[in-house]
Amino acid sequence: MADNLKNYELYLKKLNQLGIDATKLAEDFGEKIAKATFSVNESNGLAYDGALLHTLLYKLTPYAIKINELFPADLQVDKQSLVKVCLLHQIAKAVRLEKNDNEWEVKNRGLIYKYVNGQPSIRTGLHSLVMATNSGIQFTPEEAEAMTVNDRDLSDDQARWHSSLMASIIRQANEMVYLEANNTKKQ
Image 1 (spheres, one colour):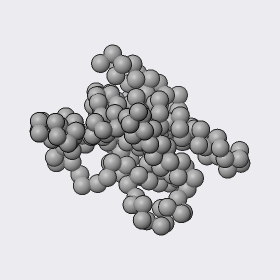
Image 2: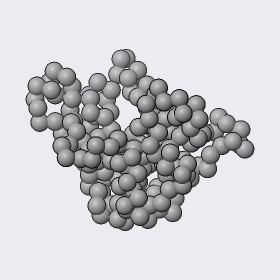
Image 3: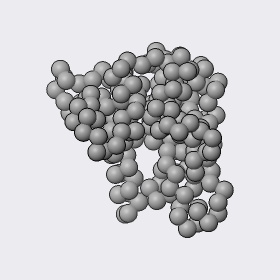
C-alpha cells in the first residue's frame, strides 16, 4: 500500500504540474484510483492493486513521450497535452473493475478482477472522459479523441487511418505496454 500512496501522490503532483486542479477528482475517486488495477487478467502481470497508476506513470506515459519524440519537432504534439491524456484516459478502471470473488475464475482463468455491475454501458475511455469532465477537467477535441481512442474498433478505418497524431500515439503506447508485459511474462 505504501507504493500505491507514493504513486498516487506522484500522480496528483504530475496533474498539478500540468495546471490541472484534480481536487474534485481526488475527492470523488482518489482512493479508488490509488488502488485500481490496469488489467483484469493475471497473465500479463498488470492485474494487481495499484497497477493502474504504476503503469500510467512508469510505462505508458514514457512510451508515449518517446513515440512523440520520434517525429520531427514541427509534427510533435504538445507534451503537456499528451501527458495529460496518458494520465487520465483509463481512470474509469478505478470504478469499473473490482476484485473477483469467483474463486473458480481466479484459479482457472486468471481473472483476478471483474467488471462492476451497474456501471454505464460505455467503454473505459469515454467513461474516463466523463469522470474527468465531471471533475472540472477540460479537454480539447484532439485530447477527447485521444482519451477515447482505445474504445475504437480496429476495423474502424476512420479511427485507424485518420486519427490525430496524439490519438495514434496513445493507442501505440497502450499496445507497447501490453506487448512488454506479455513478452516479459513469457521469459
